[in-house]
Image (tube, rainbow, N blue to C red; front, side, top):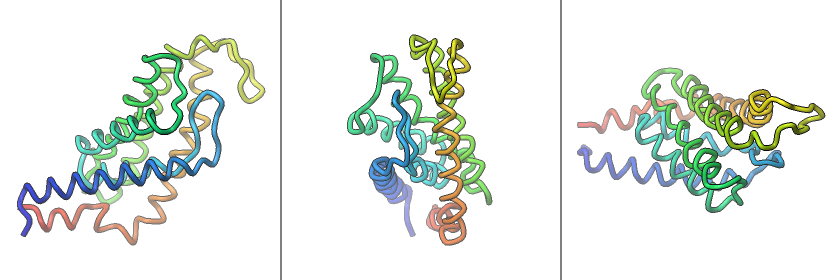
Length: 190
């Protein structure tokens, strides 16, 4: 039987593995936008970890992943404010998926909530920091509103990334259900 310190060590090890897997998957870029943002399967390991261990642990994993993205992925930023929002703060809400820890379909609801949280932070960054790009042209549209530009620009990669994470969750739900629901952790919990 595992005690609390063993569970904490297990959680930390799984967190490190999921962050490392997310970083590796972030190099599989299906598309990359000119001002940052790309389509990758990288968010799923963080979402999976969060649903398994809870929001607090998940948000910490998201923060660490954001830090790695900032350091290793050739960060696109307009100053320290952009680095803070678009990396450290933006990846942290992926951990909100942990609000659905132990719920039967929690990985799906958690994916939506975590990705929405990340989108909101990128949207705020777009209307506060990247407003300097407006007026600008993106996807053959000319934007004069920072709000409209931020919604379209950030939505153009966050919506597909959310769909990618949901598809991965759908494919892995049946084989990984006991782990997604944390049944192995509950059995070992004292």
